[in-house]
Length: 377
Image 1 (cartoon, one colour):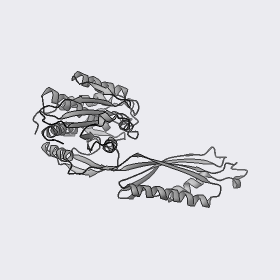
Image 2 (image 1 turned 60 degrees about the horizontal axis):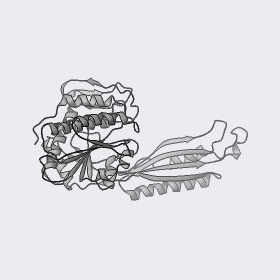
Image 3 (image 1 turned 30 degrees about the vertical axis):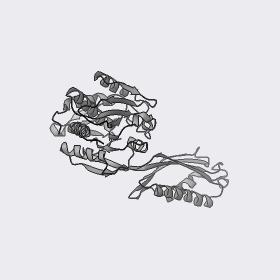
Image 4 (image 1 turned 135 degrees about the vertical axis):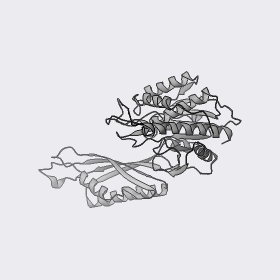
């Protein structure tokens, strides 16, 4: 078990500096430059790939094997995220960083980035054991994992990845995540004057309502969910609408079930079209990311669990219905897990994180480096 302790106040200061930096998806330049400056001060060279992702390699130390461990998080945050003003409330173990109520905090995922930078600095400063470490900080994670999709193959030429990017207590280990299908529907009708000749029109909004009323949305089964997130249509109250656009998602752990749900959507569209002469539709869909399941007996998973116990945590393997960069990493050949970064209420203006949890994340990571240094993976 590691005996060198991370500096809680230094982690907190880094975190506060980070969350004050505007870094919306697609606009992470200032945040990336901040991290580059921090790594340059450690003597670590960085590179930026075509997707704007930041990549840096740390040499191994007190390690007899050549395994490469990827540590990863994302640089972007969800809106509203401009002009974030963090505040510290509470005392002792209840000390917490919160927002001013007008923006998110950005703890998703800067509550992971700050401990990672602290631990790597600590490792270099105190000559701690570690495997070869590749740092990958991605862009556009919050917009369908865009940065991870753009990573070059060399960046993912490693042996295991640990991504801190999930709500939940330290010790939470996500080894299974879903596939995600986005679908788009265009429903058509016939426009006429709504007051003079409504009988000659075909109302696309009526068609859409009939379809939506029949779709299976929300929790479809224990492994599958469906949602409609966008509806757009209409020209004016005096015009029978001839076009409605719908965008939604299906996600789940069995792609056979997901494909069956797509077939059901198509069936409903056909049946309701037949009831409304003159109507029509197009349905398109694509996978934004594919699901994965990492065997709990995989060496990397077992080492993460060992590190959790050494840090005084109780490791808990869970399945999530959310996606992350790990969906891309795994399907491009790099096994890994997603860890809880202890933030609460992500994607909301009530987002918050306890200072003690930032420190626990760093303690956990110190032990991860030690375990991966001592054992091949």
